[in-house]
Image 1 (cartoon, helix red, strand yellow):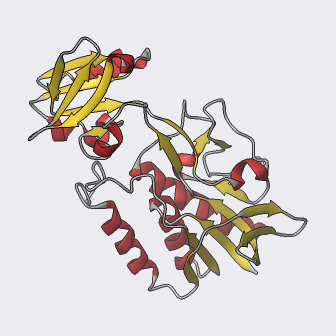
Image 2 (cartoon, rainbow, N blue to C red; image 1 turned 30 degrees about the horizontal axis):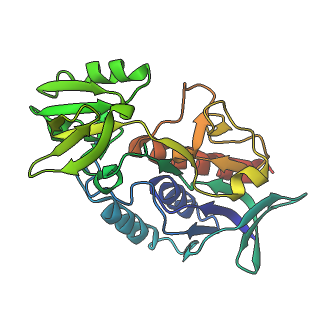
Length: 277
């Protein structure tokens, strides 16, 4: 039986593994190999790693964890998680694994607006976070392809960064095409708006199908409800990273730094619970 099983090998899960390893807790990290930022070539706004390839961040994280023999990493997908009387069980293929606690660090999957050509630019010239990708378009025009009330606020955030900010309703865009140094948004009126990059508001859902079956309480945002330490409504089940929405925040924080912090806090809480139990 493991002290903890971590499901997800992104920044949140890797940090949780590192923290548990340093406390000599028998830990298994399961990584399906699917990542929300899988199409992103440069991760930003992360101290000492600004601009690093996310794949390289994951490689370095695994390398650091390898120094701690109590942490095992497997490249495997989970099909089910269940809370039993004295343990939390995790199903991987035909194997059922048992642990004192489980950390859900699976992340989420984005669904982009249905605009031809948009997906091909996702993670490069099309993004959703101005803090992570806004500076890369500095001094050049950008488009906010977003029909929600939040679009105007996002545009104001980018005004000090971009030379021009264009608010565009997604229904007005019939196609997105890459240009030599940016994008061309082909519009319903036949015109084309050329910009350096575009920001969109994708919808998202849990990347792991087993989360709904587990029965954890969700927030109105659709993310898993947690306390500041990642505890969910089910005892010894934690959620961290993009999947988690702590009660004290208005929504989930889609941020590498926040994911790392969440992974560490959940690991600390698990170590404390092992001592108390």
